[in-house]
Length: 341
Image (cartoon, rainbow, N blue to C red; front, side, top):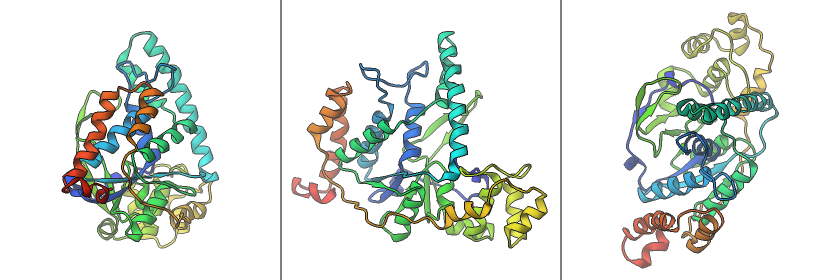
């Protein structure tokens, strides 16, 4: 879910050509949840193989990766590690929400209410450890680097971006900015119309770029105060302050040089240690020993994994893989293929 600070941010509309020839760090968990939430049948049922195993995440991983690489974008998938203990309460609440949504989904599907079924299906989406390992395996077979973070994947991606090893971070959540990523890209590989959940309204969706330094300059704050805004409006690690939205939060941090004064001004004494939350965003220790080597896809192993084991269409898998090879061969002769990977 992340922190809801989007209304405060300066967003620049871009096209995917903006990322051509660039290496980007993708928030893997965020992306996989998109896949399991949205890649479903008309009644909201996730895609499955003949043994009843969910394959929505594999479908998304295959086509998102090959589509990006066809456009000259080099993706690196960064996976979360051990979550902070402060995230436990949030995880429990989300689990309860998903359980309730699953019950509503089953009832809506039984009664033939397809729109409600799709809505509750998205809310009930889960990502198991097995699914995460399968996504890592497929990414590796596709020749795409996989980086395992010690804890928060967004913190790891931000570190890689600050080092200059990747151009920017790709995530739908704004938390990446709190973790210090210099460049955040949203709606990557997503464009067109999107239905607003629960409403019969469609909005235009385009890829967008958000620069951290530009954002801080416009808001006239530093990154620490951006983290304070996140704490005030709520993060994955804490509940929001009552009656404090993004604009109020901005005024509070602009007018105060300590969080203690903000607490005093709001009159709300939080039940969590805001100092601990601040440290999560400002003092993460990332993995420094990682590899960003791209390799040629292992075609036969991919077909065995997806087609033989999970009932994917061999024709569709072959066509997807052709996109990568065709893009590589645009660089010149066959001998140039390995240089592209």
